[in-house]
Length: 383
Image (tube, rainbow, N blue to C red):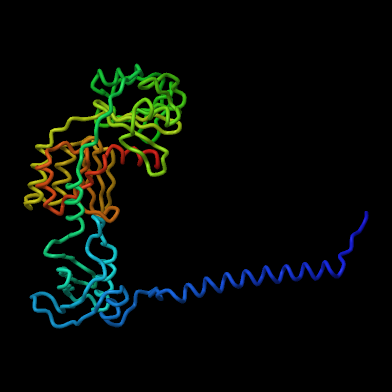
């Protein structure tokens, strides 16, 4: 085999190239370090020695602190916040919570009031057993929950329905038979995650003796609606049905709210939910009893599941629970995903004046810009 030798000139070029490469890496690292040094140092442990340190760390103006003039509170803290409570209908809740929790730790969880006279902000914080008990902003407990609901109500618009022509014989049968759960869709192969799987490319879930959801898979070769089959390009679907009522953030799901159904299109499926007309009178009577302390949470939930046994999800433990009624536009969460309350969605079919009255209670949370069926579909495909 012929051997090649590296002459001295080539060696010098290689060494020089390596040195230049190393120098570039060092300069890049130095630049990163300089940027880190130039930025405000991060208090990783969240340990401050004084209230003033906490306030100034968040670029607010510290004025003074004194013995509180309000019964039940130890200290009044005068300051000027850097941020407003809301900026263009977007809350600055995290900014305020960071300050509140930082001050609470410094004060060893004594109760205190943050007073910003310049911006008309007063935050009362009660503490007990080394933890925050309540946060009341401008005399409203759960202020951000309340304000988010009011903003949602202000921007509330019902999602428009799309006209659709149903082609699937199985779907037509389900609608004509009031979605009864005993309808057969062919040869049943198995049950997976509460869904009956049929050889013909149909999957169905039944809740409380009715069909809740029908999924057409790639094995289903017929048109489902408007001549559309499983796997069609989204642009073809949009050309036939118009602008979607719903679209996932990753652009992998689009959906339409129609007169009798919701229909969602994915890469390899078409998912259909029935629409339900709901009488909320008894539900609101239960809610009134709960709000008036005539029922505790346990009694309320027991009566609710008796009244409405058709929940799609019910998760609970000794410390939390979550129950969902997508077709009714209602979820209830307690210590679940940092949420406590009765959540009402765009498909909660009540008059706006009634919704407005209940949103005055911070036990109610507004998600009026979102349809609960769409959220249920996103959970289905992501589980």
